[in-house]
Length: 359
Image 1: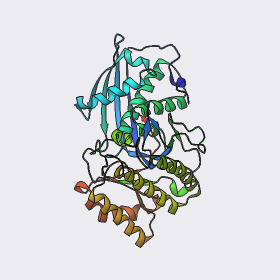
Image 2 (image 1 turned 180 degrees about the vertical axis):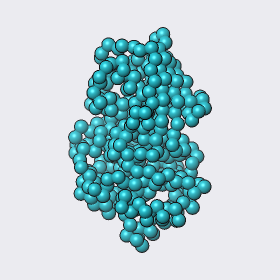
Image 3 (image 1 turned 135 degrees about the vertical axis):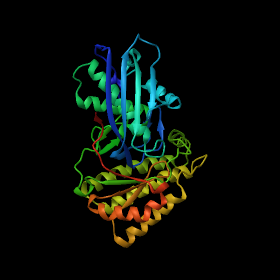
Image 4 (image 1 turned 90 degrees about the vertical axis):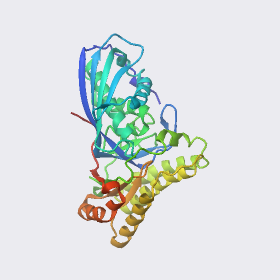
């Protein structure tokens, strides 16, 4: 596992000004990553669907200045200057400085906006930091001409990971694996890779409706939650379970066994929250309406034999997953039976996407 491949080893042709805009998606993990070591190395492998409609659009303007010992930038989120967001981005720039030394030669003006509520469990860090990483790689590609596209994506995933682990899975799509696993060729703890096998038709263009149970900020940050795994009594077994589940879901995706997909994905979601319930200190991110939605989904599936299922990230919102051939009936069910459990009846209709796009 070497990071040397991402060091800048060529001469840089510094330009006076540059401006890049990227749209990068959020993602929803099917096998969950929970627990890490420095620097942002996962304790277990994970796999996610890349989303399409839940995305961040980020523009960075680079203006050449005298070389500085600190990275200088202004940050605007949805049109407003956000000083409170700057420390996290500043820490990200510190982490990537060895791999992007050119950032000390530019002042950056960052404009960013989300298509979904910030800090509400829809992986805004994943889409936000992957967008910044893609802008940095666009600049690097201009300073070092003709970088290979696969290298750009790999390094962008590597950089994004240093800001937010799940951001490593937001560069490509539709399925991305992050974490070294013996059955996934080229997999790495340093960056995400596309799922290398052909999936069964039932899993193509998969649907994800995000039910916005709670649009507010999470009570506990993901960073705090990950750190609580260091002394967790069930951590070792959990990491092994996730790695075993990666093997299982790989076969499920190839063979099209949707019933086993449902069982594994829901089990992973509940296990993630079980880790939170049994940590010290313990905490609960689900709300009462989260449980109402889960039970309503289970009852609907029992009575209709639908292939609908749910998953959760580290928050109260529920991702409702289902195959495209059930889209019409499931959307009717969501609108009639599940939307009432959402804040102001709000939900987001999404589908599996292909990753970052330059605008």
